[in-house]
Length: 216
Image (cartoon, rainbow, N blue to C red; front, side):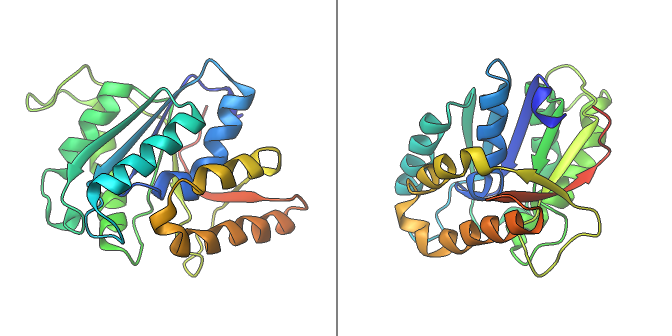
């Protein structure tokens, strides 16, 4: 089961990406497996959004405290420019080697937001680089056998879907999302989708992921 693994790495392009698409999964993991190591990394500084980079940083750190994750790291790459960053696969590979996750959760390859698609595509190369020994990477090699992709675009649904029941932590997730005051107009419709996804599997709320190479 997903919630019984030891180490998890969530990578989002922007602050609030992880929380809105996988916050329920994080809360459920830590509810069912309190000793799990849950690491979150935000790639950009969030400066292209509806607030300043500092405001978005503070919102994310408040959310991180509420979720009680093991670590929450900002890389502060330029928001809106990930698709121009040729070093992104190396950057993500180093994150995989640093945190050594049993399960990596990040963006899909196809997404209308260029930063999301760039992160998803770069992850493919990063997963390979992380397990070999190129001299330009840090830390020891690591093979991550389990990968989930956010379902961030409800109009581009993957063929393979993994539904995660977040009913027991849904109110807590809504409280986490309430920290992102500058982004609520964008985020609240996704909470409504959680309720819709829940009805599809006969529960109060659910998150959906695209699974890859799940071996546990």
